Length: 318
Image (cartoon, rainbow, N blue to C red; front, side, top):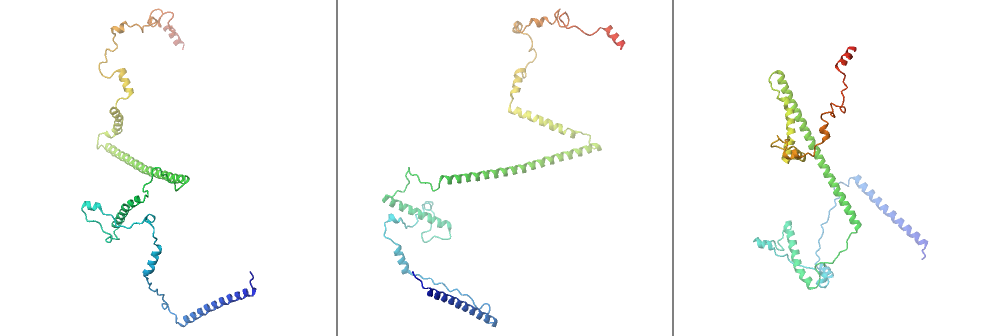
Protein backbone atom coordinates (compact mmCIF):
# COMPACT_ATOMS: atom_id res chain seq x y z
CA UNK A 1 0.00 0.00 0.00
CA UNK A 2 1.47 3.41 -1.08
CA UNK A 3 0.60 6.60 0.85
CA UNK A 4 1.35 9.98 -0.66
CA UNK A 5 3.45 12.18 1.60
CA UNK A 6 1.71 15.33 0.33
CA UNK A 7 -1.68 14.02 1.35
CA UNK A 8 -0.34 13.24 4.81
CA UNK A 9 1.05 16.75 5.22
CA UNK A 10 -2.20 18.37 4.08
CA UNK A 11 -4.21 16.31 6.57
CA UNK A 12 -1.91 17.30 9.42
CA UNK A 13 -2.20 20.98 8.46
CA UNK A 14 -6.02 20.79 8.44
CA UNK A 15 -6.01 19.21 11.93
CA UNK A 16 -3.74 21.95 13.26
CA UNK A 17 -5.95 24.67 11.74
CA UNK A 18 -9.06 23.11 13.28
CA UNK A 19 -7.47 23.08 16.73
CA UNK A 20 -6.36 26.69 16.39
CA UNK A 21 -9.86 27.76 15.34
CA UNK A 22 -11.40 25.99 18.35
CA UNK A 23 -8.93 27.64 20.70
CA UNK A 24 -9.72 31.05 19.16
CA UNK A 25 -13.46 30.48 19.57
CA UNK A 26 -12.97 29.51 23.19
CA UNK A 27 -10.72 32.51 23.78
CA UNK A 28 -13.23 34.81 22.16
CA UNK A 29 -16.02 33.42 24.21
CA UNK A 30 -14.01 33.85 27.42
CA UNK A 31 -13.15 37.42 26.46
CA UNK A 32 -16.77 38.20 25.78
CA UNK A 33 -17.80 36.74 29.12
CA UNK A 34 -15.15 38.78 30.93
CA UNK A 35 -16.29 41.97 29.24
CA UNK A 36 -19.91 41.26 30.11
CA UNK A 37 -18.97 40.57 33.72
CA UNK A 38 -16.95 43.83 33.86
CA UNK A 39 -19.91 45.82 32.50
CA UNK A 40 -22.24 44.24 35.10
CA UNK A 41 -24.34 42.38 32.64
CA UNK A 42 -23.68 39.02 34.39
CA UNK A 43 -25.24 38.62 37.82
CA UNK A 44 -25.54 35.57 40.12
CA UNK A 45 -28.84 33.76 39.74
CA UNK A 46 -29.42 34.69 36.14
CA UNK A 47 -28.29 31.35 34.72
CA UNK A 48 -30.39 28.57 36.33
CA UNK A 49 -30.43 24.96 35.17
CA UNK A 50 -33.97 23.74 34.66
CA UNK A 51 -34.69 19.98 34.50
CA UNK A 52 -37.19 19.14 31.86
CA UNK A 53 -39.97 16.77 32.95
CA UNK A 54 -39.38 13.22 31.77
CA UNK A 55 -41.93 11.92 29.28
CA UNK A 56 -43.11 8.40 29.97
CA UNK A 57 -44.02 6.53 26.85
CA UNK A 58 -46.43 3.58 27.09
CA UNK A 59 -45.84 1.90 23.76
CA UNK A 60 -48.21 -1.07 23.93
CA UNK A 61 -47.61 -2.21 20.38
CA UNK A 62 -43.86 -2.27 20.85
CA UNK A 63 -44.19 -4.21 24.10
CA UNK A 64 -46.44 -6.76 22.44
CA UNK A 65 -43.94 -7.20 19.62
CA UNK A 66 -41.15 -7.82 22.16
CA UNK A 67 -43.35 -10.33 24.01
CA UNK A 68 -44.12 -12.16 20.78
CA UNK A 69 -40.39 -12.33 20.08
CA UNK A 70 -39.71 -13.84 23.54
CA UNK A 71 -42.58 -16.30 23.36
CA UNK A 72 -41.84 -19.70 21.90
CA UNK A 73 -44.31 -22.47 21.32
CA UNK A 74 -42.61 -25.14 23.47
CA UNK A 75 -44.14 -28.01 25.46
CA UNK A 76 -44.67 -27.60 29.23
CA UNK A 77 -41.84 -30.03 30.03
CA UNK A 78 -39.38 -27.62 28.43
CA UNK A 79 -40.87 -24.55 30.07
CA UNK A 80 -41.90 -25.80 33.57
CA UNK A 81 -43.89 -22.64 34.28
CA UNK A 82 -46.91 -22.46 36.57
CA UNK A 83 -49.45 -19.67 37.09
CA UNK A 84 -51.93 -20.25 39.88
CA UNK A 85 -53.62 -18.71 42.89
CA UNK A 86 -52.58 -19.47 46.50
CA UNK A 87 -53.82 -22.61 48.23
CA UNK A 88 -56.68 -22.51 50.71
CA UNK A 89 -55.82 -21.67 54.31
CA UNK A 90 -56.84 -24.95 55.97
CA UNK A 91 -55.76 -23.89 59.48
CA UNK A 92 -57.94 -20.79 59.53
CA UNK A 93 -60.87 -22.84 58.23
CA UNK A 94 -60.40 -25.49 60.94
CA UNK A 95 -60.18 -22.83 63.67
CA UNK A 96 -63.25 -21.06 62.29
CA UNK A 97 -61.42 -17.83 61.52
CA UNK A 98 -62.00 -15.52 58.59
CA UNK A 99 -60.04 -16.77 55.53
CA UNK A 100 -56.95 -14.79 54.64
CA UNK A 101 -56.81 -12.23 51.88
CA UNK A 102 -57.38 -13.23 48.29
CA UNK A 103 -55.15 -12.36 45.36
CA UNK A 104 -56.09 -8.71 45.11
CA UNK A 105 -56.62 -8.01 48.83
CA UNK A 106 -53.02 -8.51 50.05
CA UNK A 107 -51.62 -5.59 52.03
CA UNK A 108 -48.10 -5.01 50.69
CA UNK A 109 -47.02 -3.26 53.89
CA UNK A 110 -47.97 -6.23 56.10
CA UNK A 111 -44.87 -8.46 56.05
CA UNK A 112 -46.54 -11.47 57.64
CA UNK A 113 -49.55 -11.41 55.31
CA UNK A 114 -47.32 -10.99 52.26
CA UNK A 115 -45.00 -13.85 53.22
CA UNK A 116 -47.94 -16.14 54.00
CA UNK A 117 -49.40 -15.35 50.58
CA UNK A 118 -46.08 -16.34 48.93
CA UNK A 119 -45.96 -19.53 51.01
CA UNK A 120 -49.49 -20.60 50.09
CA UNK A 121 -48.90 -19.79 46.43
CA UNK A 122 -45.76 -21.96 46.42
CA UNK A 123 -47.74 -24.72 48.14
CA UNK A 124 -50.43 -24.60 45.45
CA UNK A 125 -47.75 -24.65 42.74
CA UNK A 126 -46.19 -27.81 44.21
CA UNK A 127 -49.58 -29.52 44.47
CA UNK A 128 -50.34 -28.75 40.80
CA UNK A 129 -46.84 -29.43 39.42
CA UNK A 130 -46.16 -32.84 41.02
CA UNK A 131 -48.93 -34.71 39.14
CA UNK A 132 -47.79 -33.16 35.85
CA UNK A 133 -44.18 -34.19 36.47
CA UNK A 134 -45.24 -37.75 37.33
CA UNK A 135 -47.42 -37.81 34.21
CA UNK A 136 -44.48 -36.89 31.97
CA UNK A 137 -42.20 -39.41 33.71
CA UNK A 138 -39.87 -36.89 35.39
CA UNK A 139 -38.35 -38.12 38.66
CA UNK A 140 -38.98 -35.86 41.64
CA UNK A 141 -37.02 -37.80 44.32
CA UNK A 142 -33.32 -38.50 44.56
CA UNK A 143 -32.40 -42.20 44.24
CA UNK A 144 -30.85 -43.99 47.23
CA UNK A 145 -27.58 -44.74 45.39
CA UNK A 146 -27.09 -41.15 44.20
CA UNK A 147 -23.80 -39.53 45.22
CA UNK A 148 -23.33 -35.88 44.34
CA UNK A 149 -19.91 -34.48 43.54
CA UNK A 150 -18.48 -32.16 46.14
CA UNK A 151 -18.41 -28.52 45.09
CA UNK A 152 -15.24 -27.93 47.14
CA UNK A 153 -12.08 -30.00 47.36
CA UNK A 154 -10.93 -31.91 50.45
CA UNK A 155 -8.02 -29.51 50.98
CA UNK A 156 -10.39 -26.57 51.08
CA UNK A 157 -12.63 -28.36 53.57
CA UNK A 158 -9.60 -29.21 55.73
CA UNK A 159 -8.68 -25.52 55.80
CA UNK A 160 -12.22 -24.63 56.84
CA UNK A 161 -12.11 -27.31 59.55
CA UNK A 162 -8.81 -25.98 60.91
CA UNK A 163 -10.20 -22.47 60.93
CA UNK A 164 -13.32 -23.57 62.80
CA UNK A 165 -11.21 -25.48 65.36
CA UNK A 166 -8.98 -22.42 65.88
CA UNK A 167 -12.04 -20.23 66.41
CA UNK A 168 -13.42 -22.73 68.92
CA UNK A 169 -10.11 -22.78 70.80
CA UNK A 170 -10.05 -18.99 70.87
CA UNK A 171 -13.56 -18.94 72.30
CA UNK A 172 -12.60 -21.50 74.97
CA UNK A 173 -9.51 -19.45 75.90
CA UNK A 174 -11.58 -16.29 76.18
CA UNK A 175 -14.12 -18.09 78.39
CA UNK A 176 -11.35 -19.44 80.62
CA UNK A 177 -9.88 -15.95 80.90
CA UNK A 178 -13.30 -14.57 81.87
CA UNK A 179 -13.69 -17.27 84.54
CA UNK A 180 -10.21 -16.53 85.92
CA UNK A 181 -11.01 -12.82 86.10
CA UNK A 182 -14.25 -13.57 87.93
CA UNK A 183 -12.43 -15.90 90.34
CA UNK A 184 -9.81 -13.24 91.02
CA UNK A 185 -12.52 -10.70 91.72
CA UNK A 186 -14.26 -13.16 94.05
CA UNK A 187 -10.93 -14.01 95.77
CA UNK A 188 -10.18 -10.33 96.32
CA UNK A 189 -13.67 -9.85 97.73
CA UNK A 190 -13.23 -12.76 100.15
CA UNK A 191 -9.79 -11.50 101.15
CA UNK A 192 -11.17 -8.04 101.87
CA UNK A 193 -13.98 -9.57 103.95
CA UNK A 194 -11.49 -11.64 105.97
CA UNK A 195 -9.29 -8.59 106.61
CA UNK A 196 -12.30 -6.54 107.70
CA UNK A 197 -13.43 -9.34 110.01
CA UNK A 198 -9.97 -9.55 111.61
CA UNK A 199 -9.86 -5.80 112.08
CA UNK A 200 -13.30 -5.89 113.66
CA UNK A 201 -12.28 -8.68 116.07
CA UNK A 202 -9.06 -6.85 116.94
CA UNK A 203 -10.98 -3.65 117.61
CA UNK A 204 -13.48 -5.50 119.83
CA UNK A 205 -10.64 -7.14 121.76
CA UNK A 206 -8.84 -3.83 122.29
CA UNK A 207 -12.02 -2.22 123.59
CA UNK A 208 -12.61 -5.11 126.01
CA UNK A 209 -8.96 -4.90 127.21
CA UNK A 210 -9.36 -1.16 127.84
CA UNK A 211 -12.54 -1.79 129.78
CA UNK A 212 -10.78 -4.40 131.91
CA UNK A 213 -7.85 -2.03 132.56
CA UNK A 214 -10.19 0.75 133.66
CA UNK A 215 -12.03 -1.62 135.96
CA UNK A 216 -15.32 -1.45 134.10
CA UNK A 217 -15.48 -5.26 133.83
CA UNK A 218 -13.87 -8.15 135.67
CA UNK A 219 -14.44 -10.81 132.97
CA UNK A 220 -11.64 -12.25 130.84
CA UNK A 221 -13.80 -14.02 128.29
CA UNK A 222 -12.14 -12.15 125.43
CA UNK A 223 -8.90 -14.08 126.08
CA UNK A 224 -10.65 -17.41 125.55
CA UNK A 225 -12.00 -16.48 122.12
CA UNK A 226 -9.16 -18.14 120.15
CA UNK A 227 -9.27 -21.26 122.34
CA UNK A 228 -13.00 -21.64 121.77
CA UNK A 229 -12.48 -21.26 118.04
CA UNK A 230 -9.70 -23.86 118.16
CA UNK A 231 -11.96 -26.30 120.02
CA UNK A 232 -14.77 -25.77 117.55
CA UNK A 233 -12.43 -26.28 114.61
CA UNK A 234 -11.01 -29.44 116.22
CA UNK A 235 -14.46 -30.83 116.88
CA UNK A 236 -15.53 -30.05 113.34
CA UNK A 237 -13.54 -32.80 111.56
CA UNK A 238 -14.48 -35.31 114.30
CA UNK A 239 -18.15 -34.64 113.70
CA UNK A 240 -17.62 -34.94 109.97
CA UNK A 241 -15.79 -38.26 110.46
CA UNK A 242 -18.63 -39.58 112.65
CA UNK A 243 -21.10 -38.63 109.98
CA UNK A 244 -19.08 -40.37 107.25
CA UNK A 245 -18.40 -43.46 109.36
CA UNK A 246 -15.42 -45.14 111.03
CA UNK A 247 -12.17 -45.35 109.12
CA UNK A 248 -9.98 -48.48 108.80
CA UNK A 249 -7.60 -47.46 111.62
CA UNK A 250 -10.43 -46.99 114.09
CA UNK A 251 -11.97 -50.34 113.11
CA UNK A 252 -8.63 -52.15 113.58
CA UNK A 253 -8.14 -50.66 117.04
CA UNK A 254 -11.67 -51.54 118.08
CA UNK A 255 -11.13 -55.11 116.87
CA UNK A 256 -7.80 -55.42 118.71
CA UNK A 257 -8.46 -53.65 122.00
CA UNK A 258 -12.21 -53.93 122.17
CA UNK A 259 -14.86 -51.27 122.19
CA UNK A 260 -17.16 -51.15 125.19
CA UNK A 261 -18.26 -54.12 127.31
CA UNK A 262 -16.39 -55.94 130.11
CA UNK A 263 -12.61 -55.40 130.16
CA UNK A 264 -11.56 -56.92 133.52
CA UNK A 265 -10.54 -60.57 133.76
CA UNK A 266 -9.21 -60.80 130.21
CA UNK A 267 -5.77 -62.06 131.42
CA UNK A 268 -7.11 -64.76 133.76
CA UNK A 269 -6.07 -68.31 133.08
CA UNK A 270 -8.53 -70.78 131.78
CA UNK A 271 -8.42 -74.55 131.43
CA UNK A 272 -7.20 -74.28 127.84
CA UNK A 273 -4.50 -71.68 128.62
CA UNK A 274 -3.31 -73.72 131.65
CA UNK A 275 -2.87 -76.88 129.59
CA UNK A 276 -1.17 -75.01 126.72
CA UNK A 277 2.64 -75.18 127.35
CA UNK A 278 3.77 -74.36 123.81
CA UNK A 279 5.14 -70.94 124.88
CA UNK A 280 7.16 -72.34 127.83
CA UNK A 281 10.97 -71.89 127.57
CA UNK A 282 13.13 -73.77 130.13
CA UNK A 283 16.21 -71.61 129.65
CA UNK A 284 14.30 -68.43 130.28
CA UNK A 285 12.60 -69.88 133.35
CA UNK A 286 15.89 -71.24 134.85
CA UNK A 287 17.89 -68.01 134.26
CA UNK A 288 15.72 -65.98 136.61
CA UNK A 289 17.18 -67.35 139.90
CA UNK A 290 19.77 -69.78 141.39
CA UNK A 291 23.39 -70.20 140.45
CA UNK A 292 22.98 -69.46 136.76
CA UNK A 293 21.06 -66.27 137.38
CA UNK A 294 21.84 -62.78 136.27
CA UNK A 295 22.45 -61.36 139.76
CA UNK A 296 24.22 -64.22 141.56
CA UNK A 297 26.49 -67.12 140.60
CA UNK A 298 29.55 -67.44 138.51
CA UNK A 299 27.83 -66.87 135.25
CA UNK A 300 26.14 -63.70 136.54
CA UNK A 301 27.23 -60.16 136.15
CA UNK A 302 29.64 -59.14 139.03
CA UNK A 303 29.24 -55.88 140.97
CA UNK A 304 32.20 -53.61 140.20
CA UNK A 305 31.31 -50.95 142.78
CA UNK A 306 33.95 -50.68 145.61
CA UNK A 307 33.01 -51.26 149.19
CA UNK A 308 32.09 -48.70 151.80
CA UNK A 309 35.53 -48.58 153.51
CA UNK A 310 37.29 -48.23 150.19
CA UNK A 311 34.97 -45.41 149.22
CA UNK A 312 35.72 -43.59 152.53
CA UNK A 313 39.46 -43.89 151.98
CA UNK A 314 39.14 -42.50 148.46
CA UNK A 315 37.06 -39.65 149.76
CA UNK A 316 39.55 -38.82 152.55
CA UNK A 317 42.43 -38.76 150.08
CA UNK A 318 40.68 -36.28 147.89
